Length: 195
View 1 (cartoon, rainbow, N blue to C red):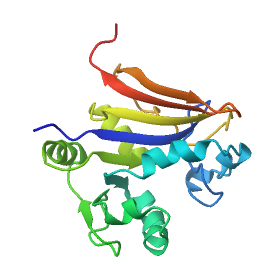
View 2: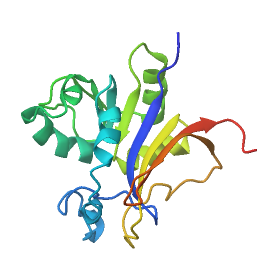
View 3: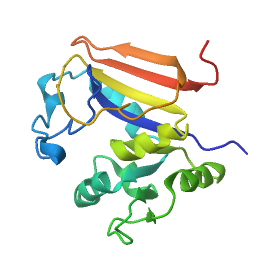
View 4: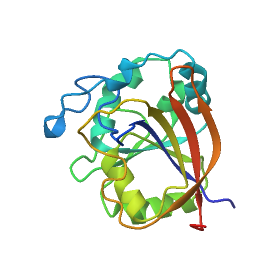
C-alpha cells in the first residue's frame, strides 16, 4: 500500500510571505495590512494551472483559521466541488465540531495525527495556506511536496513559509512554469539527499 502524500500548496511572495494572499481581510492577524497582495499581478494564464490542482481527488488538511474562512464560503459555492466532498482534517486546540460536511478535528499532537493519516488508505492530503500547520509539518519532515506559486512581489511583512524551519531539507523540482507576468509555479518533491 502506497503512503498518502502531504502536499502543501502556497501562494508566496519573493520575500517568503504566505499571509493573506487573496483578500485584504483574509488574515489581518499581527496587524498585517497587505492582504490581497496576489491581486497586484493579474495573470489569466494561472487559471489552467490552478485547475490542475483544484480538480483532482484529495483530502484537506487545514489550520483552524483557514477552516473558519473556508467553512463560511465553499459549502455555498460550486466552483470547487472537490473541496466539499473531501474529508477536511482540521488542526485545532479549540474547535471540536464544524458545519462543513466531512470534517474531522485533530485536537491532539498534529505530527502524530498526520503520520497516522499518511499510513491510511485514501487520497493525498492537500494543505492550503494554514501557515502554523505547514510550519509544524516542516519541523517534523512530513511534507512530501510543495506546490508554490511565487509572485514577483516583495510584501515586506507577514507570516513566512519557512520562518521556523530549523532542519535542512532538500527538494527537487519536478515541474515548473513561468507565466507571461513573471509568476513562477513550481512543484518541489522531497529529496532524501542534500547533494
